[in-house]
Image (cartoon, rainbow, N blue to C red; front, side, top):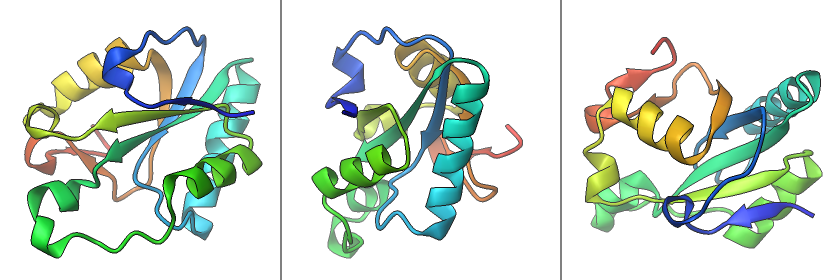
Length: 139
């Protein structure tokens, strides 16, 4: 059974060799499934665990509530799809003004390493993060 942490900012994580991916994963389409498969493969290769860090609410909903995207998949269905893909855990990051203001290096240090204890992160080529979406795949 998949382990869900409803608020990563208020939980202690006891995962070792954690391979993480980040995103909304609404709909869990073919590209998402490829990323999830890579996360699971990397976790197995290092005898670690796999997890998804998802943001709630969706950043576009936070920044533009009047133009929020229509979500295709509710959380419980997403968790089920993650579990079917072999993911061990889901971490929910409450997306608010504080998180939105984090510089990319602070996001990595404080959230990915400090809160999630990630040892590896898998993201798509067009993934953006941190204040002003200044963090990217190369970062």
